[in-house]
Length: 126
Length: 348
Image (cartoon, rainbow over all chains, first blue to last red):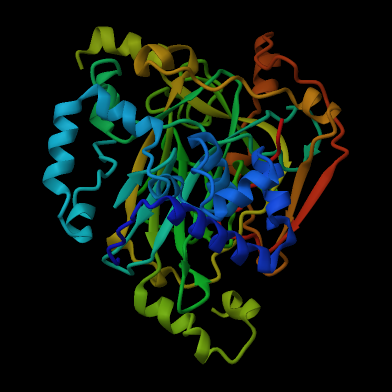
C-alpha cells in the first residue's frame, strides 16, 4: 500500500471534490453540482464556490454527506478540509496525553508498520 | 485477520492475496410476519452498532470474554440479516471468492449441523461470496428461509435450543475461508487474458453463580421467524479450492438491547418499524434472482424447526407482538450483478 500524505490548503479540498464529482458525473448526471448540492442540503452556488476554493470547506456533517454520496472516505475528505472528525476529537480528549504521545511517536512510521498495529478482533475458546 | 471497522467485520487475508477482503455487515430490518405466507426480502435499515467485548470487560459476563469477539444489541423479537461484500481484485475485474460459515448457538444456519471448524459438501454447510449477497435466516427448504429473530437465550425458541435441547451458546458464529490463490488465478485470468465474456467466468470456474444469572439477562439467541424467499447457492467450485489453513472465525455476541446502554454507555438504535407500518407507507420490499446458480436443498434438521409463532401458540403465549399479515405492494427486483457493497436499503 502506498503512503499517501494529505496536505490541507483550502483549495485542495475544493480541487479534490471537483475532480471526484466530475469523474462520477461522467457516468451519471445525478452528480451535477445542482443535484449533488440538493442531496447534501446546500445551495448549488455555495458548493460551486467551495469547489473553486472561494469558500472555506463546509461543516463536518456536510463533508460526511458528500463523502457518502461520492463513495469517498469521510476521514480523508475531512483531512483535506483541515478538520478532524468529532469522534476522533472525543477519543483524544478522553485520554489526551496517551493519544498525543502515540500520534507523535508514530508520525513518521511507514504505512506497513502502522498497519501491523491495527487491532484485530480477538478469538477465544468456544 | 479480522477487524471491526465502521460497525462491520472485515476479514482480510494478506498472506493469501493482498486484496482478498470480505466485509460482513449486520443489518437492522423489520420483522416479517410469522404466518403461513412467504414474503419477499425486507429492507436494510442500517447496520447494528458493534463493539469489541474486550472494551467492556468489566461489564460483560466472563463467558463472553472467554469466547472473545464482538457484540451488538438486539431487542427481543427484532430481526437481522447479514450482508456480504467481497473485494474486487483490480487486475482480474472479479471479486475474490470466499466460503462463509454462519451458525447461531453453534448450529449451522445452512445445514443445521453442530459447529465444526471446516467445510463440508454434503450437506453443504457454507455459502460462497460474491455469489451469495446476503443471508436472512435459516435454510428450511430449497429457496426458502425462516428469518433470524432475536429471543432471550433460555426461553426455548432459539434454533440452538430446539436442536440441542440446551441454552448454552446463543449469539452468532462466523468463519470465513478464502479461495487458494493459485486456484483463483487459474480460474479467473487477468482481464487482458480473458477471451470469454466476463459474465460467464463464475460459472466456470466462572464464577459460575453470578455470571450465569447475568449471562441469562444479557444473552440473546436467534430463532426462526417468518418464511422468506431466498436461495442459498450451491458451491460451483471444488471443496479443495478453499484454503482451510487461512480461515478466520469470530463469535458475535447478541446483547439484549435493554442492557446495552449500561454496558457501553451508548444508546441502542430505535426498534425497527413494524412490517405493517412499513408496508402501509408504500416503502419497498425486494426480490433477488440469480439464474446462474443452483440452490441448496436444505436439511430436515432446519426444516423441522418450529417458528416462534408456532412454538408460542403451543405454549399459549404471544411471543411476537404486531404479527399481522401484510401484502407487500412496492417490490424492487434485483437481478444478479449487484454493485460492490450494495445494500438493499430504504429510508424510513
